[in-house]
Amino acid sequence: MSLVRVLVTSRVTLSHLFEVDGVATDAAAAVNVAVKRLDGTTVTTGPATVGTVGDGIYTFDLPESATLDTYTVDWVGAFGGASVTVRDYVEIVGGFLFGLAEARSMRPALDPTKYPLSVLAEKRIEVEQIAERIAGVAFVPRFERVRLSGRGTNQLVMPRIALRALRAVRVDGTDWAAPDVAAVAVSSSGVLTRTSGAAWPAGWDNIILEIEHGLDMAPEEIRTAGKVHLRSRLTMGDTSVPYRAISFTSGDGGVYRLSTPSRDRTGIPDVDAAYTGQQIDAGGFA
Image (tube, rainbow, N blue to C red; front, side, top):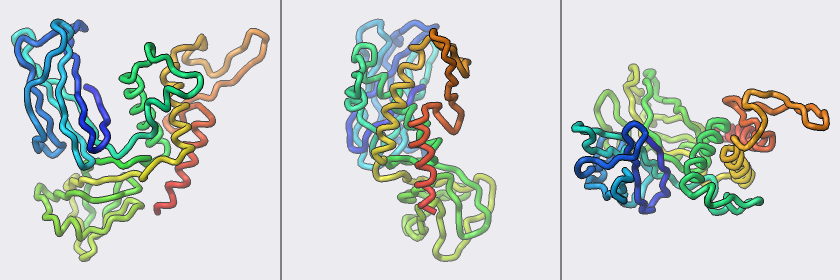
């Protein structure tokens, strides 16, 4: 399973590597692909294109999307006499924390052989997820489908701030009509209010919402911190200091205490200052 983030309106070729017991393996017959939205609506289907015989790599052209979204991508093939389905995910996003080319060009420049674009893209997603978790806000426009419990009031508190739009509502299994969705007031602080005064029906996990959230663009301080953070994730194994160390003694006898990471910090002082500083800025949405 993998996650790929694709810029809105961009066309991309997806790829998947099939392995059996860790060995790249071609399917016994054609591999078919089904791309769907999270609500189950089919986006596109078709046969995948096989690469070099024996490399186990299949590709599929994903059409561009004009809106933010999240897709499931099911690759279905026959291996060892059984049908196998493997799922990947694609997020259609409104932007990235930083460009891969600018991340590579920071001094010292990253070796393109050691760090190909595919690796940089994978680690950029990791950096974006960590930054958003620490700061509590998405730095570029994103789509999300969330399930919440109604409390019988006309307001619903979302798990996200910087709300941009409410796209769809399903309550107790029934989809709302577009005029009803449009009648909900969307607050950037993360509150959805039914302006008619009607209540969000009480229940357990009875409300499914499709939302767009996130800033228009990341502050420059966050973009720079993200690129520094990316380099640390790429090179985290290039050190003689044991992973569990919290301090070390240099060859000249100096003792150095290491900044350690946690759920709320990366362990990189400058990066943490930027990410946690954004928590205060995000509070301005309230």
